[in-house]
Length: 488
Image (cartoon, rainbow, N blue to C red; front, top):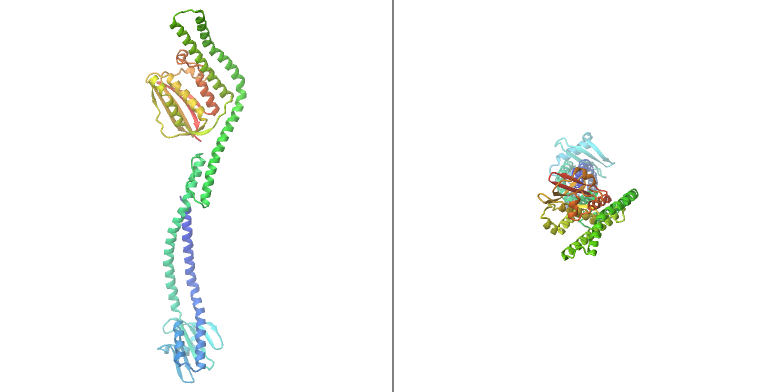
């Protein structure tokens, strides 16, 4: 990810360390020397006071006082020279005193001041920054005279502080680079621990946007991200139930609109079709019942045949009435549609398993290769009715190679389920009417297996209650019935 939080955090922290290091280097280079000079002025004044006391008390040569002065000047890296006029001697803490004596003479003769920059000046002394013309080095110097008039010179080299500053800067660079490297590793590690759950939440939100509500946040945790993940899971459950309710409400609204338009037409068609379909079985039942009553045949085998015909026709009428009731409920919208998300693969596999006996009787070869689950939104029970009607219809019209093939395919956010059977194609003129109630392409063949022309009408009613597409396709070696359902 080009603008990932890990990279940004690492860049920010490493950048902060680099900026902090740069500021320290600038401070060292710009302010360390003035700070050193300020401290050195304080040290000069301290040494000046101690020397003044020793001269006033005439204890410069005292061993104890001399030791204290030696320790103080060595500690602060200060060289001193005092000309004791009373005793006609020179007191110093350096072996080669000529350089200090010449510099003091230059100050006393107002010559050394030309090469100096005054830092502080009083009636008794001046503190200056000067450059020694003999060794070409810079010093902080204090010169003047004590209360008794004895001249003095204090000197401390400035080069040492510059060298210390350079060493300090190099040390800061090395330490800063090491700290930046360690910080980068630590920030990368901790940012990875932080961004891992965030990336999981991003993937989860993307799956939720695709209406995959099986996705859950699993990283846990009791911090803010963990609480956010728990809220994502709650939102997922809430959205799932809300979408189910919306689909149910939308479906109910569409059914209400269509119901009024179809009501009158359906009633008249229903009465006409029922009367037509019941006419034949009622006539058969009536004729064979009258024959039994009048004793047309005394042969027990014939009587049993008459009874079988009556029972068979009564069973067909009973099944037709049940189908008509189901169809009536669907078309009039009296049956509640329960939209839910379920596995269509599992539903088809269950229908095929329940029809194993019919497969053996028809000597059919069933092909269903779908292994992966495919989840759809619909009423699971009614979808099973559609699948069962299609597969039963395929078995009843088998011919040729006697193959029944069921397929599932994803197309533009929908699942297309198709049931193909080998056999004779449906005549083109019959295709527009096969979904009508009581329509039969081959009435003699339909009567053989007890069909009444209502099965495909039930399919039509169910799919239209779902507001989904359905249809049939002819092939040279058979027929394929299909329907579609939403994946999201």
